[in-house]
Image 1: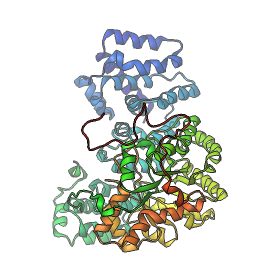
Image 2 (image 1 turned 60 degrees about the horizontal axis):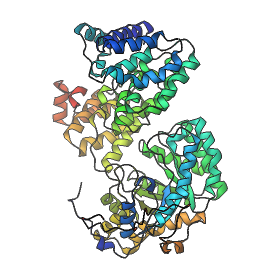
Image 3 (image 1 turned 60 degrees about the vertical axis):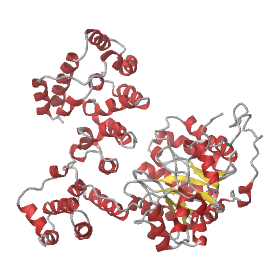
Image 4 (image 1 turned 90 degrees about the horizontal axis):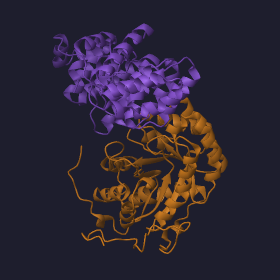
Length: 287
Length: 314
């Protein structure tokens, strides 16, 4: 993401924050911004913030919504004011000393309660020096807490932009495990890779062995990488399992370049028809 | 796939003894200890685990390990259940390398303590380089100490994680007969057994094994080198998973001998290789006057057992 692009989003966020807090809270935040010892003050301000701002869902103007939409951050509309104000606070914090910046914010991560952690991970796309947060983001994926995982996995452009392949694959796999909304993972299709596809195929086999269903969106990440080995698993799915899984596998195969699989799909009249009339797309598998 | 709800009839396994080789009692209540004792569990192993959130300093590891060999063992003894533990740095927390380094330094202080029957549970969570590093270091520690290893296999990407865990253990020259590969499923069991390792199964609702599937696995692979545990912890889990599975096995026609192997004997055989586990210690009399460093679980004249069927709590 370009810096000027992020700067523009930060400005919109700042305006939304102002519109959603009272004068006392605004004065309190301004005092912090003018403080000469910000690093020392940050933790207290960050933790106390909801007491000043409240926790109501934010109100947003049509213009702001349009601007956010254009910048790809329209999801912010659904946040509460304390979450947004915390993100804004962190987004504007850097004072040039990278070490101090890292240690100050890292300390917040170490002692964060759930809402603080949600705000911290939500702030990742807006923090300076994005590269230094990579390990922290990977650590967040190890969390067991649903809302924290959602803050990282859903509608957050940071992971796709900065995580290495292993951590990225872990995010996607864990999103399936913890039943997150897969279609909200930013960069999902762009970062599909063979290793992830093979892992997901093993996961599907494990689910079948346990008598469980497989999430249809899983095949979206497999199709492009279809080879002889993966094709064998796809066949199993087509032959034994439910219609939704079958249709998802058919769609995945239609996106592959593996001809034997395409030929095989043609032997299922219902699937062939569904593909031909264009009614199948990944959004049709959303809950 | 799910069977119709059926009540657990404890009488089907009355008189049988059980060993739960993987259960996190720190997260459980005294009611669980009572129910476990009533259901025939005579001994258990508590592997060192993570608390659901990462520890941030060495002292919290030290206190936790101390509680496994101290207070928790005492608490268990008050219900007539012999408590052992395995000690290790769990995989998730291996990713905090600066802290992991410090934990590695104190591990040798704990693994040689009385009643520590293995290094565990160690292995992979999300299969990072740091997890591999500390898995290897702890395998070396196990080799040096001549201890069995209890390997946690990952929830995600399990098949590859299981294969990798075994490959690495062999690379370090460990005998597969000293290694208990835990949390197996239908996709991993064959290779684990074929390669000579112990295959443990965790009966844990919704996520790991169901016990109906467990019955089928024993039918297919036999009872040799297979063991069943509950891995009950702070999640929705069942500390009676071992006796319940035994009861189901009985109902589904498995032999008493096979049931005994997978719910009792095999785990003892495997972990007794530590030299720290003696079946004769299982039947120690409960000494209710005993205290742990001056503390007792019986507060202000409480009796250890209360009548759960009574509505009156006096």
